[in-house]
Image 1 (tube, rainbow, N blue to C red):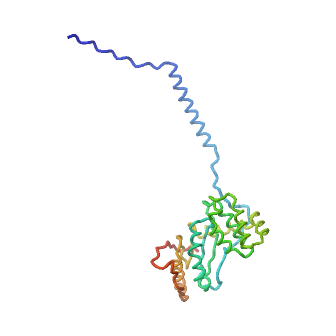
Image 2 (cartoon, helix red, strand yellow):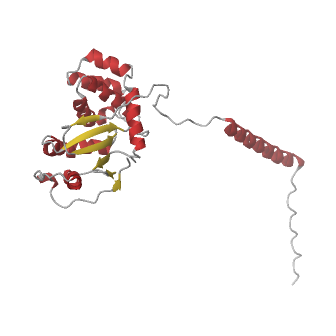
Length: 264
C-alpha cells in the first residue's frame, strides 16, 4: 500500500503594500483625532455651577419669619426649602398640630428661615414670592399654599413658576399689582440670600433642619417627637413643662431622631 505524500501547507497570505499603507493611515487618523479631542477638552472652559445668588446685591440683615408669642419660652428655628418634599409633608402633617397645641397656647414660637437648595430649580422664586406676600402681611398664608401646591410649581412641573405664585396671590386676596411687581423685580432677592447665609453659618445639612433647645435635628419630626424635644428644652431652661394632649394620630412609639448640638 503506497502512502500519499504529505500535503503541503499553504504559506500565509502576504500583506500587500497597499493594505499596509491603509492600516497605518487609519492608525494615524485615530491618533490625530485623539489628540484633537484631548486638546479640545483641555481648552474648553469648565462648566459653571448654576446658582441664583446675585453677588452684586448689598447685604441685608434678616432673621426669617416668626409665628408665635415673643414671650414664648421656647423658640424653634426651622430651615426650610419650599421645593423640599419632606418639608411639605411636615407642613401638611405635623405643623398643624404644632400650631394648635404649642404655638397658640404660647409655649413655642417658630422661626422659619429659607434655605433654598441648589438641587431645586424653582425654590428661589418660591422664597421670593413668600417674601412678597410677607410685604402684605400674609407670609404664613403663602407659606402654607406654596407647600400645598408644590406639585404645581416645582421644577418638574414648570419652568415658569411665577405664574403659579401670582395665581396663589390672587386666591389669598393680595394686592395683585403690588405682588406682581414685587415678584417680577425680584425685590427680596437679597433677603433670601441673607437667609441662606444664616443656614450656612449654622451648618444646616439639609431641609428640614430644626433647632430646638440647643439641639439640631436633621430628620423629619412627628408631632410627638417635636413635643418631646420642646418639653426637654423647657425642662433644661427651668420653665414648667406644659404637656398638651397627645394627638390621637401620632400616639405610640416614636422613632429615634438625629440630634447634634446646634452651633451658635
